[in-house]
Length: 225
Image (cartoon, rainbow, N blue to C red; front, side):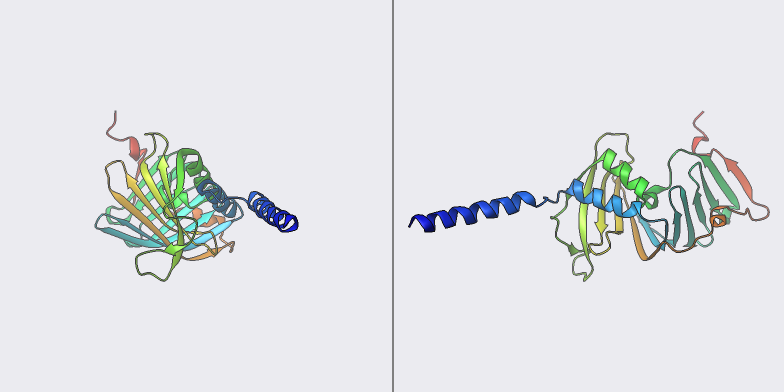
């Protein structure tokens, strides 16, 4: 009887020791793991879809860590967004206009999908699992599985009040970013066909102005004087 009792105690204590020895995967720790994954990425190329209200945009995103980001759009055709760590440039072919702005950290939702962007999210947002750490369908009825993180801003200074990150459980790459703005509008960024650490020439992040284009500097500040 005593031997059986002691055996049960040993098994219970052994089980508790195993549980204590395992790391509990919190949402904060998982976001940290994803950030560490992106810190090992040198270059990133993928298809990008942006949906905002009734507007749908398609293009290819190129990133070279830590500072370079370029989006070449097929819809709107020939539109370009370029960020080099110091300035943001938007080319609008329909208006033959180049909008240029000196900025400290811009690039929109696409820039979230970088190690630097993820570190900013960890600093400025509180993460939680939408369902839990187990993969769930990307959309209802979808066969594509993701881990869903919900991030809520810590202060009113952030442009998105809430962000949902859909992350591939196999690659720990962001599949989708859904942000809710302060005006309660929703913006969604979908990434697909991603290639990592392939050769991207640095000259790709130098924009050659088309002839007869008009340059507008500091466009974000116009009309605020």
